[in-house]
Image 1 (cartoon, rainbow, N blue to C red):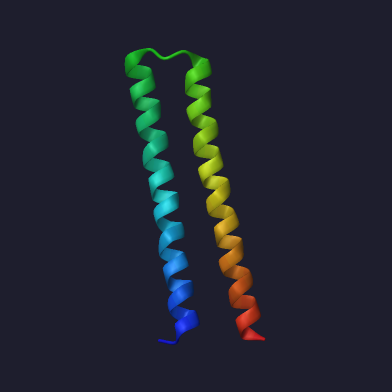
Image 2: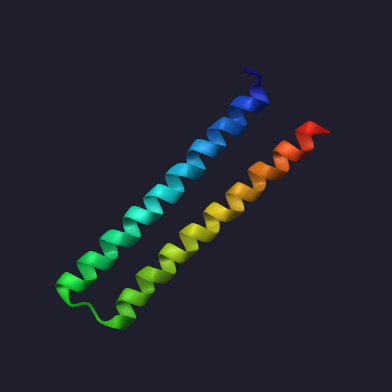
Length: 73
């Protein structure tokens, strides 16, 4: 495997970990918040943090896609 392909594969794995980690964080924050009786405001904060994680993942996916488009030309 060539060096650019290895870098793209590594970025893809990191992106997958960001998505999975954000999902796990979001589920755990929701469950813990419900169990401990956190206010809706606090729970919304964790929802926004999770949303930021998913937006970051979308940006990372876009960067990988653009890098692959540039490599094909």
